[in-house]
Image (cartoon, rainbow, N blue to C red; front, side, top):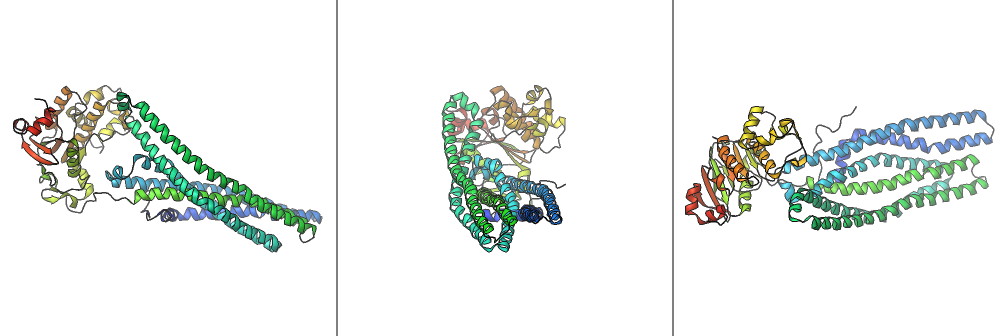
Length: 564
């Protein structure tokens, strides 16, 4: 029993869609070649049946019972070969499909984790989702069709050789007719490729629109924007439908060609064979065999047309996958030794300094300035950031992620047990989890759940309100207990009473640890050891909260929202 997915999918070749498909094929070369071999035997078992029937018919004509029994036994043997190889071929086909699909999922998910914050900046949500929705299936289909396609080619060659050996004119009809049919189908592939590419782009845009609507549905209902966005979704959905119809129009021509072109070839072979039989150039059994070959050729010829279609779709899908795999993260990290807590974390661009062991607050006149500083300090965006005088970019990125945690309101709650959601490292006990919940004023949320910490959290924590989600995210960040914790507006969605309790408990929970809180909440700022005021992207003033209220008009305006 083979196990899927594999532990290590390997390093993909993302230099182009054809190179990627070739890499996928090479990665599973053994089962792929075994499947091709079984497919060849399966097709040959079918290809030899008309010849055996023709010999049996000639034996009946000659009243040769022994020969008739011999070819009847051959027919039985060919049936057994087809049954056995057909079952095994299908098993290998399914395995190669799943292997290609899983391998693609593994390398794209691994790349998404590697890109981190870079991914949403470069690609839309819909484009990434579409890889899982459709592209992996198309790549799997491309691998699957290789088995039957290779066998179909061998079967066509075998039939052509048999026909030429029996009658040169009939063999030449097949030998010339098959390439002509392939050439006739060729002009349809380029427009099909282009239209599939356009449809894929539109599907990605539509998926992005759907994700945005679902994520912001609560806000849309609050402002009455449901109908507007529903109308936009319908409009984009119709564009996708029209694109699908354009793709289907070319695919219908391909389907028609799969019937028409082999049918023309069958008619030609049957017509010539009948004339040759009347002239005595072939026997009645050979005429029956020729008709059987003509009918049989429909299947491998249709398989070749199907292969062209699926390989084209696989090429389009592989191009999308390569686009993701070719992206490089903005931050890569170095190989210096991490020494968190031994020095000041400083952002050279803004002048923000986060001193070790203190609770520092950052109030910005523009919220985007605070977010930009947090991203640079957390190594989610490039910048002139140093830790203890050493460039943060020289430190290993994995260690930076372990020791510096940035928690903002863009973080999500995943589905699963609440305990596992809060304790992401799986090392905390109930007491430690309880302390983190207390510091985040989230113990009432857990107490209200019938199963407590063992309650199941739905996708994105949609059963919780915005304020509850924010407090649970804060508890998760506190439970991680990093050397340096950067919080971005951790109390923006809670009421004033809860905010006051969080502000009081946060400093105690992080005592002796380095913490930066980006906020304009007076309740939180008043509890900070040191406050920095950023305007225009740089530090304009610093000190205590009450002192800045009296000495910095800009700070006072940002914190009090312009109220005296």
